[in-house]
Amino acid sequence: MKPLPTLADVACLAQVSTATVSRVLNAPDRVREETRRRVQEAVAQLGYTPNFGARALASNRTRTVGAVIPTMENAIFARGLQALQEELARADVTLLVATSNYDPAREEAQIRTLLGRGVEGLVLIGEEREAHVYDLIRQRGIPAVLVWTWRADCPWPCVGFDNRASARSIAERALALGHRRIAMIAGVTAGNDRARQRVEGVREALEAAGLRLDGDLLVEAEYSLAAGRDAALGLLARRPRPTALVCGNDVLAAGAVAAAREAGLDVPGDVSVSGFDDIDLAKVVYPPIATVHVPHRRMGLSAARLLLALDAGERRPESRRFDTEIVEGGSLGPAPAER
Image (cartoon, rainbow, N blue to C red; front, side, top):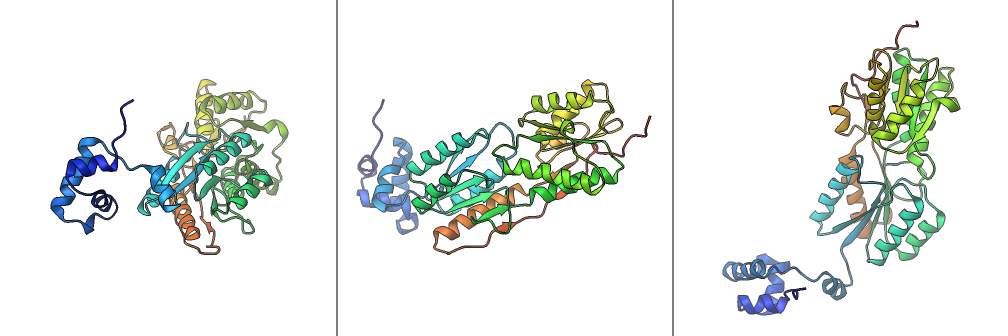
């Protein structure tokens, strides 16, 4: 492997001191334009990049934040993560991202790895994890912000929304359209407080209407198109058939729409489908999926600002709760007439 170019190599090629090269890289406005141009040309010619380890050692700061998200396989977290990265970058903070595949043990391992790399803050999805994981973060003395979730008495700063109330609202919309045989395709609730709260919200809406989300009308599935399809096919084979499928996210809902079409059913004429998250997939499926809009970018932006405020020494900046709203789509219509 070719040796990496050093600061001294850049200084030699540009015919300046290493201190001047450092100033060009860190405070370019303090260097004359001609000198700055020579250094930048030398950097480009050599392909030089600053040594992260050396800079961290010299400043005793890594200027990095770690985020552990459940998955990169669909767009659920993409927009929030993009906004998080953009806002951190404005403060010259680098974001390191790891995934857990919705596995608590893997999430813990990723958190430990990020801590070992010296991250100075953490962004974690949801609240549910073992107490010793939170103890570890406290021992390291770094700030952590929880996103995609919110509750007033959460002991950690959080940026998100009320998953239970949001899911209840979409179920109430189905009820208002006359549906009484409502089934749910939920995400796997073990270790996932957001999925569990969405189930609780749908159950609350149905019970308020004198209905029940019975065991055989509730199916848990991994967040994938295939899992949504399989779960929907099973529910649609029941007699009497559900007239509405409330899904824990848009990926499951898209799979359910495909299943209905495969079963020869019209959406929403024969069966309605709703989703959750309002990702782009919901708009390109036909018919477009009725869903719950989640403020992805605003959550990412607020999480970054909250972390930076904590890093700057604010004792406890306020958590941020966002509202959600129903996005009407062609997949959710009036209940079909009894036959």
